[in-house]
Figure 1 (cartoon, one colour):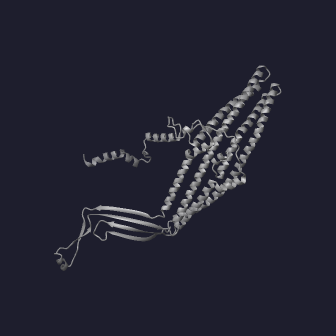
Figure 2 (cartoon, helix red, strand yellow):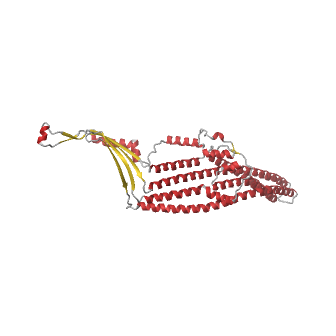
Figure 3 (cartoon, rainbow, N blue to C red):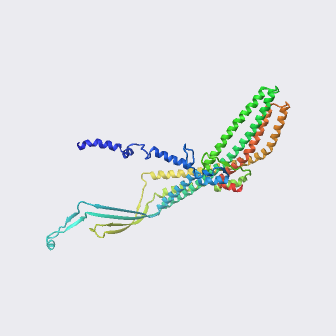
Length: 487
């Protein structure tokens, strides 16, 4: 077969190989097979402690699922919460950016080398006067211009001379960015601690509300039995009986809703603390009242240590330093350094030569790109200032609202403690009146509903007060685990 006939076959074989598919297909193949992707996803699901349709290996914290108190839950979240882990990695990224910016102030060292072998060496003849040529035996000397093989090595050290301060402002911007990531990490930590506390008290509240529903359902069923007996004896109308039957069915439906709320709160808590999502976690009850700080103290603390506000202040410094660095780039950039060149060829002497240099580069900005970047940076500075002002206003409103909500929940708790006894006495009287024929089923059911409402307030007000106190603590920028120490 002639060589030109091999060309189509070679092209087909090349198109069928893996590298060709990587180069020709825009979507590529990812480098992973479907089995490899499934293995990776299964491994991540096992580490996450989720039900992946298999029997995953228990996670490191799964054996601790069970009875859980609030300090332990917060301690677990500090190490196992995925969002906190992501924020910690963002801080590592900011640290790497700082090291990159710092490196612009340090000497840059480069080295290069090359070995070359030619097929022949290059020579030349020297034209000499006849008298001098006679002294050399009548034969002109041959001068080697280039050796057949030679190696050349070069080493250069360049030190930037930041006479304009451009690099220094880049470094300051990177440091401000790192501090901003520290503030954002703290904000994420407080946010996830709040998620733990909120889901913890949601789980307690859901359990207490289910107990209230059970009590209400028992009362409704007792009333249904009494109403059915009186209806059978002709002492009650069908409408009164139907009203009680509807109330029983509604209470049964609320019981199912309460069970769902318990499961949802448990799943949220497990997810926040890093336990298996469906772990059968139970929590320790909390009976103490939270201490609510005064509004002036809360505002003063929030302005001083709120992490979102602190992150915006660090961002302000970062963008201002970035804008200054861009403005300083209008001036020449000066650098100094030294170099060493060495060759193995002995044609020229010396074979090793050192040098020192001072120079500059100057971007005159004729393409106007730098001025556009400066204008953008200045606009970002002004935008961040407006965002700080907006955050301050929102922070004040949130602190005031949350502090008053916490006090309102404690007031509701005090009122419910008295109202439960009164509502219970009201129900007892209504049942006596119903038995005597002086009250209807509606009267009894309204008394039952009133008692259930007060019991629900009593069951939930304390936990909601704790949650509002934790929200206020987060706005103040203080660690939420300190609340468990106080309690």
